[in-house]
Image (tube, rainbow, N blue to C red; front, side):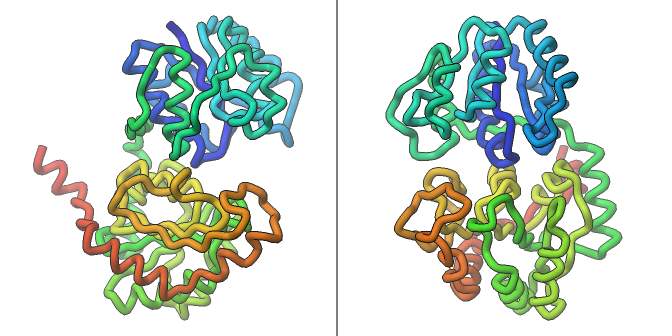
Length: 348
């Protein structure tokens, strides 16, 4: 049997769909995946994914590559296409695959409810608490019961690991004492101010830890503002690809971040985290380890996924650096320093 996973973006959402990939493979499915460029490194080369089809983002749409991608999908002759995203575009990719069974969430559980018209088999079920379990619940359409699974298959990262080790060494950084501060993300309304991260960086230095500020495409200036507001106590991270960020997060002591893809990547890697939340609900898409700590202001509109909303405006700014540092102090005693790679190899 062949199944097509349709989860186009974003990085965090693709990460939250990886347990469904693991469940499909456990039940003997050969799995293909349609994905947009930003998250493609997480599935391309992934040992559990047989075929990756590149979906061009709508803003960069070109007819030629689109037609080629559709031909590629139909040539695979998938038995079922699973729309995990609940949008018009994801439903369209699932339908265009030519799979005889096109499955997705029913209207109330879709982000764009009217797109249900493209779904042949709409699934209605009581909503799961965490989005990972919502994804896993969709597999009931193919008689797979996997709610609760927390397995995140990832592609090989040997080259990325070597690059990160070299850059950490060149910067004189001991990863076991590094706390990653990640100020960036997709939605401005979900982000915590750079000044807050700067104050947290000062507190981390007082605790003998090294605050390292990570950044993605277009976020370099934001990271620089954190370093400036920290009075130079924070260190600007070297540039990383997505897989290099993965290897960096695998090594560090702790990560502090708002609701963004890098936070979800850290959770998948079982790296200790402190999450900073406002309009979105951490019970739905936050850390799932009982040891992790969340600091939150809950606005009246919560849970709210609107990028602009007067009801949650200012919610993130109301969270203080003192609260975040207290959360770090609660999380760190439960976080064992990561085992150095050399020690891991010696133990084998």
